[in-house]
Amino acid sequence: MKIANVLKKANWQLILAAPVAAGILHICATLAAPYLTAASAYSRLAPALPVNRMQILNASAPGAEPLPFMSPDARYAMCRFDTSGGPVSVASTLPPDLGWTLTVMNPQGDSLYAAASVPTRPTPIQIAIVPSEDAFLGVTPEARGIARDAQQPTVVAATRGIVIVRGPDKGFSYQRHVDAVLKDARCTARTF
Image (cartoon, rainbow, N blue to C red; front, side, top):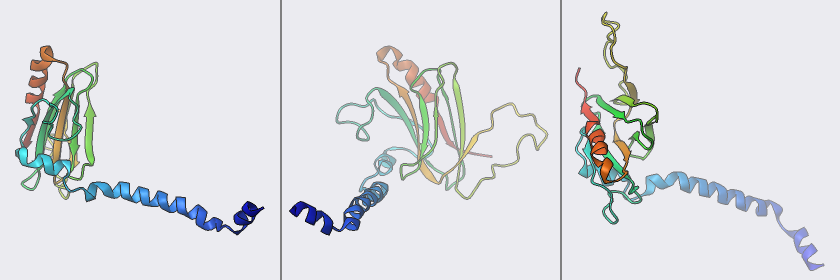
C-alpha cells in the first residue's frame, strides 16, 4: 500500500525530464569534445610536417606512432597545407587495390574530402585546395579555345589542414610498391 502512495505522489514530469536532460548533456559534450582537447591531431602532426609538401611517415611501431591508435597495417604519406599564399594542388593515383585512401582534413578533424581506391582500375585524384573565400582558379582551357586533355581538379575550400594518403602494408615483398605510390603523391603550391 505504501508503494502505491509513493507512486501517486511522484513528480512524473521531473522523472521524465531527467533522462531527456542527461541525453541533451551527453550530445553537447560529445560535440564539444574536439574543441576542448588540449592537443588535437593537427597540433601534434603540424610541427613535424613541412608546409605544402608530401612526406612519407615511418612505419608505425608500438610506442612510436605519431598519433595514438594509428593502424600498424598501413603506411602513410601526409602533407600539411596552407593556402594563405594561394591554392595548393594535390595529386595522387591510388592503385587498383583495396585499402588505399586519400583524405583532406581541416585542423578541427573534419573530413573535407575523401576518396578510396577502386579494385578494378587505378584511381587518379586531382584536387585544388583554395582559400575559403577564393573559388576562381583562372580561365578554363575551353574558354581560351584549347581542348582539355586532362581531368578538371576537384575544388576543396580550406585555409589549413592535412592531406593523408593511406596505403595497406602487406609485408616486406610489397614494401617497394607501397613506397613508390606514396612517393608519387604530390602536394604543392599551385602556380598559374
